Length: 285
Ligand code: AMP
Image 1: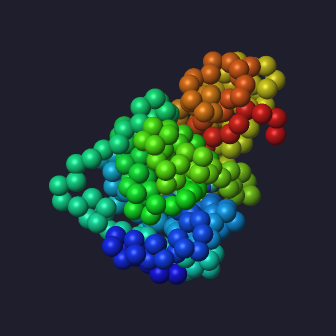
Image 2: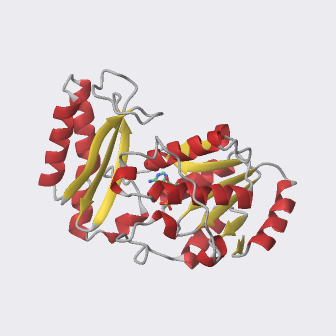
Image 3: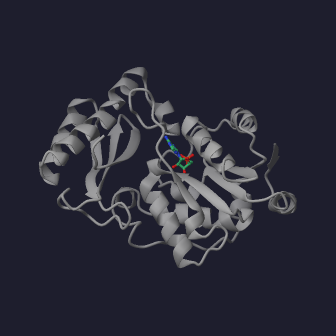
């Protein structure tokens, strides 16, 4: 597996790989875990070559967020990707991605509003902008993203549709189900921030979400079930809840009653300084 940090050699190597068949892109910010590797395996099953990218994108972090603290472990990540049979790693420096004078922003309205878009202003502009650039740089036939970041997936699909992206086109953007730890916690690079006590408290999140889903399926209102969820998180050790909301899975429009199926529960909550997100379908387990 070759690692590229500059665009010109990346492009000429990609041209050669494309002759073998479909090229799949798995964009990441590194500090890889089993969730990322599951995306790589799903990519391998669909393509002749997998290109992974690692870029901790400054434009998707707010001023008071964890850009500097975000875990960076390139050598370990390279070994993991190589072992999965990834053909090529694209790991640009921030200055290569956003050279002096860089001035373009992509903003996807509607699906970017609310949920993480409200809690992290500008976040999805940063995501859409970098993913559009990655698509143009790599020109993959398909690209894979985790359902753990469901709103992000919706933003990327909307962008691909709206900008007539052909590489990859909207139908070639593949969502992969969330990979979880044994206790149900969604895998995340940010879980590394948790102390041992916080890590065990964090399992309250998926547990309380399942409880709220069961309550809604049992006929409780969205308001009641989400209030019960917030209370469970607070008593389980979470310091605050950014949101706990039920939304339409595609449009992300608010759903007031779970009777309007299909629907999905979205939560972001903080444990100490660490912000965790998760989402689940409102459907019988
Ligand atoms: P990140 O490095 O956090 O930007 O994530 C890179 C990609 O991996 C995104 O498409 C994420 O949605 C996906 N991802 C992160 N965690 C998980 C997980 N637990 N299960 C499935 N996909 C994930």
